[in-house]
Image (cartoon, rainbow, N blue to C red):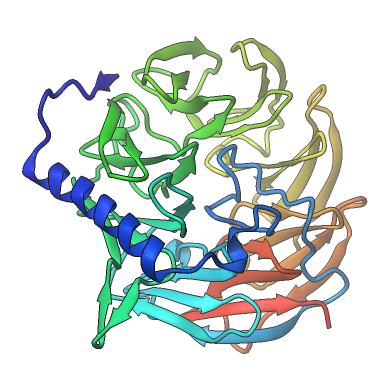
Length: 410
């Protein structure tokens, strides 16, 4: 952990902080309180929905028995299908990114604005203290940029206060020593967590000020109770990082690399190279699920809902979704995706009724949560692969082959 101990701010930091103050002033003057400022609005503001990476929404429903298109918009992704970032939803707006940032009305599909920012990971939306409107954090290969969530204010044909702050910094990955490439930013408690300069970095969401850096981290952080849980090197350790100070506690929990962590009120679900683990918040291992089919699939992230974890296993013949009881690690059910040419799938997303599985090389699939039975499949023409999905406003949002989709129950 490297705390921010610099006595004076750099010119870039001063400009960022000054921009924050100016933008806040402009926001108070020009931007009225929007309906989205109601904290009861259902949102999916980052990949896997929340800081804990649960991928679960108890208050929204997507398609249940079948899926039809509510609206769709073209999106210049510019990336291979397997790396397309997932959309996120906040304040009634769907944000999708590729070679540009596209902001779309979640209900109507009307384009709110476009911005010339490219990234290969999804943005994260946070309600920073300095602003009345959301802040959209974009993490590109060059660093992290925070944008006005409503696009800024148009004055004389120009967008005012569209950019709130920018902090430059490269991105790299080293599973032995740290640095997470391809990891989307996570927003929690006024902080944006992102990988820059080979380190997990905590940025103040209002100003961009660096609070701390941790050079040994390399997975998407899962935040719960003011602690960010993350895979750390060297070795096969789980790290618990204090969100305010950056202090790190290490737990030796695995015989392989920690690939993914999900944090809930009752504990952690940790995906490793050779097993899925149930880990208490104090770092003790409660159970192991180490089915032979799971090994080698440890890079798959997990969704957790109401005491059940959903993840994937891979065999020579098929890819399957499994449901595991997080109390003891026992298998509840296994559901074969049974999709032609679907060799794997992205992290699932969960509502009270359905587990949504975006496949690589096949359709988007809805699985009945109670039984594991196939509920429906959706494919629009020759779509080949799907991003991780977002769920809000009784709709499902996903990207496939250069198109942003909103799907709903017919």
